[in-house]
Amino acid sequence: MRATAVAQPNIALIKYWGKQNIAENLPATGSLSVTLASLTTRMTVDLNDALQSDQLRVNGEPAADMLPRVSACLDYLLGADRAKASIDSECNFPIAAGLASSASSFAALVVAASHAAGLEADTLSLARAAGRASGSAARSLYGGFVELQTSAQEIHVETILAAEEWPMQVVVAITATGAKAISSGDAMNLSAETSPFYASWVEHQDHDLREARRAVEARDFAALAEVSEHNCLKMHSVMWGSRPPVVYWNNVTLACMETVRALQADGVPVFFTIDAGPQVKAVCLPEAAGQVLKALQQTDGVIDTLQSSLGNAARLLED
Ligand code: DP6
Image (cartoon, rainbow, N blue to C red):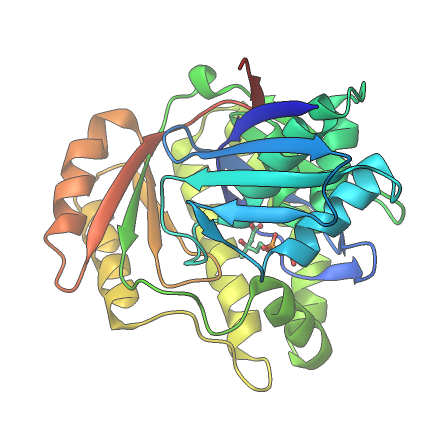
């Protein structure tokens, strides 16, 4: 009744920002992401009839704030009459700072919990269970370049290109530490209710998704860079147009974007993307990674950098 799984966060190039059904956490639009290799969440789930309630530790510390979402995810996956779980999560990167720790956490949770319970579940069912807990988590069940499509009833997720078929590097510039002021889920609901740009964002998402999918299939870096930066800035415009506004950037976020623009002007194959946090993710071809890393490290105010290649799907670890 015990299993351990590992999962990596993913970074959306075409973003998920808004839900068509809040109760079922069904995204309003599709999205496209890359799964990372070297940032990992390792989760052990121990299902035990003797426990009175679920227990969750993250990096050795009790994590009561995340527990209700974790328990709800287990109820959905295993049924409410399941045994209670003791869960240990180890994350090797900063949590809740816009690095998608919830994505890797829920992806690892559903893989570990389904095995601990002896449930025969296919990857798509696990992705749907993870996605109910956190929309972006559904994509971390898959490796490489991942596309999520949504209908009025359910999501469909698949790898459209494996990591090794188009190697890339992602350099993350950490510009601030600490938890964000508003969660991505609350912020996107606020955008849907109040941002005058939200309807147009939803309307054009399929177009951006098609463009990005074509760029991935053709391995056209310039085209992927253009549509990814456009989609990222459009999502942040939707946030900025919300009332009250949602602004995750700081001055160092902007400085990092300038660094990436200066590299691009020199012909370096790199582009930026930014999620619900102040960190800047620079996606580049492998030959440019050293130069991109150095330029971001030298950008005033950058606290730290992380680097990763693209990685594989969430998976079970043998005990
Ligand atoms: C900006 O998946 O964290 O990273 O479903 O409410 O848990 P919930 O939202 P979440 O939102 C991710 C938002 C984003 C864009 C993306 O990953 O596509």
